[in-house]
Every structure is written in C-alpha cells, then in structure tokens.
Length: 433
Image (cartoon, rainbow, N blue to C red; front, side):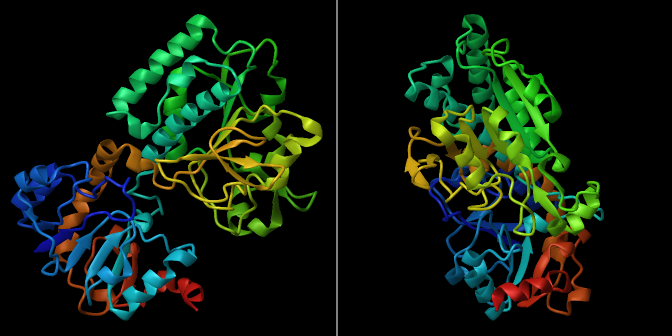
C-alpha cells in the first residue's frame, strides 16, 4: 500500500502537512503503508524529519494510488483514476475551483474532501478550525494595536505581532499575556473607551479565537446587555460578547418566532439584524459558516452608516476568519495572505485601501490562517486523520461506489467516484454547467 503526500504550492505561506512524521512512522510500522513524499523547503517538517519517519522522499508520486494534500491541487497534476484527499473548496460551487473539479472528472479521479468528513450525526471530524480562530484573533489584536498607533495611541498592543511571526503558539500566548499584564498595570487604553470584542459564532473557530482574547481577562456580557456598557466607566476594560444565530437574524414575518432548525431549512424567510450591534463593538470576529442562501452578517451599507455625518465609530477591526469574499462580511472585498493580511474598507470610496489608515474598519481577511501556526495545526489535524488512513489505503475504488469499502466518515466525504459526482453531492452538477 502506497500513499503519496504532495508538497503545497498554492501559497508561499502554506507550511502545513496532513500527516506529521510521528504518525507516518506509526502507520509505516503498524500497517506497512509506504509513504512517498515530495520534498519541500517550506514545509514545517523538514525533509530529513520525514525521511527519518520512514518516508521515501521523491518528486514522483506516480506509484501512489492515493495522494494526500492540504490545499487545492493544480489541475495539470491529476493522474487518471487516482484518489485525491484535500480541501477542494468546491461544495459551495466556488467558481474558481470548478475547472479543477472538471479536470478530475475527465481523469476519472476519486475525490475525498476533508471538509466533508463527518460522523453519523454530521459533525466534522477533521478540521483546522480551532487554529484558524487562534491565528485570526492573534492577527486581529495585532491589527488593533497598529490602528491605534496610526491614530496616535502607542499602546502596549503595538508590540503584538501577527501569528506567523511567532515561533510557536505558546510563544504567542506568552507574549500576549505580557502585553495584557502591561495594559492592566499601566491603564494604557485609558481614553480609548471599553474594548468590546464580538464573536459571531460559537463553534471550533470561535472557541480558538476566544481562547486568545481571554488572555486579556475580558468580562463576558450578553448581546442584550451591550448597550448598557458605560463608555466612560468602562474605559480601557475588555468585554467579550458571543452572538448566536438568534442575534443575527429575525423572521421576515412579524408574527413568527425564531426557530433555529427552521432558519437552517428556510433562510429566505429571515432577514439580517446584526447591524443593531455594530455601534457597540470595537472588534468583530467573524467565525460563522455562510453560503449565499443566508442573510449577510454585515453589509457595506451598515458599515457606511457608522460613519454617517462625519462620525468616528467605535468599530476598529473586523477579523473575518471565515473569509468569504463579499459574503457574510460584504466589505471583505478580497482575501489576503500573511504577508499583507489587512486593508481598510474605505466607506467614502467604497473600495479597499492598503494598510491601517482611512475612513473605515481594518479588515483582516487571510484565507489560510491555520498556516500561520503550521506545526500545531498539522499535529492536531494529523491526530484526527491518522486512524482513517489504514482504511483509506486498503479500500479498492475500482468497483461501483457501493462496493468501495471506505471507513464511514470517508465514504460520506467522497465527492467523486471514478470521475462521477456521488449521490450526496449530485447537487454540484448545477455549478459545473
């Protein structure tokens, strides 16, 4: 049984790998799986570490019927009849990846997408979400400090760094802990008003982001209590508020009541109301899953209203961890990378402006945030994936789909079998038309 692991080439910032050397060594010894790994100078685990785990370092993966990656694979790389496992970013009909999907269909490939690996209850099993939240909050705090500095307030937060600039997650947490202590000791944010950070969503991404923000020992408040925070008495203090679906939307019909499952099933019967909370927030951290079926969380018009009549609103940073361009956060105009992670959405010009200055919020829109914490993210991901690998390696896809004896979570995640959309994902045909 041979499995290939390709090098990541979508971005110079992508340093993750789907299986870490320790798990490669275990699978090699216990299940006699032979791993072929393409060399990479940017991967967080060196070629020497992979070779020491028993992997064969080679450019050529042609001997491997199964190939693992992390991000999208270039269309010209696919080989006929092989099984590929990676984040394809196709299940929402993402236009920019339909060509890749067509190529896989032409080559009669099998596609298993990490994003759709779930248990029988539909809960995701293999994900980088927590680390997206961790990195996104670190970056958002850095952006907050830099924006204050541009406005003439040189606070301890100006010393914060983006997540990728730290040697490890522990180093980032330690440094932010010292910054938080300095903020408390010196009352350095006096005059800035209360620092109110809102988290849209409460899943894995939000939990990671909250873990970082909790370093600043915020007081937890409910969305209903936001308007009661005294701007003067709360000067320089940190507050945290977590928003659920019931705070983001309301039924269009005045007599109807919000019901979560009804909202999931019939989002067209609901409208967004999140703009009522925006005036009270200093930072908004967006952690929700979104598709065009659902109302936007923040529209451009809602942001522009904050700046009406020359007002300077309290909202400084939107950390759009979900990063759906012109999606749930409409002023996320385009994604960024760790080298240039932010821009200002200029409300007067209705366009983006590089850097931290301008009339509009700073938008953090890095679309590969977990890659900023590559070692920790890879370890957690590999821990979730490793036990599925023996079944993946042993399963023969040559027969019909019913006879492809994959472990259940992988079978549910199979988008293509021999180049055809499986029944669960047949809806994607409309995006290929």
